[in-house]
Amino acid sequence: MQTITAKENLKQLIKTLPDESSFEDIQYHLFIVEKLSRAREQIKSGKTHTQSEVEKRLKKWIIK
Image (cartoon, rainbow, N blue to C red; front, side):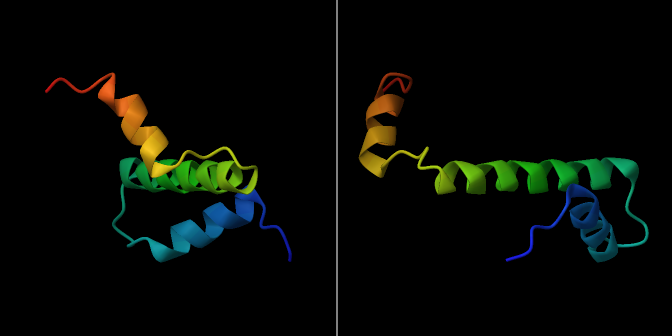
C-alpha cells in the first residue's frame, strides 16, 4: 500500500472543496483531516479505550 504524502493529501482535499471556499474553510477541513489521521494512527498502535473505560473516566467529570 502506497503512503500518501501530506502535500498530496492537501491537493486532494483542495480539489474536493467548492471554488468559493475561504482560507478559513480550507483550514477547518485540513484540521479535521489531521485529527482523523492522528486517530487512525492511534487505533493502529492500540492506543484506544473501550466504551466501559471511557464511561468510567467520564463519571469523574460529569455532574449528575
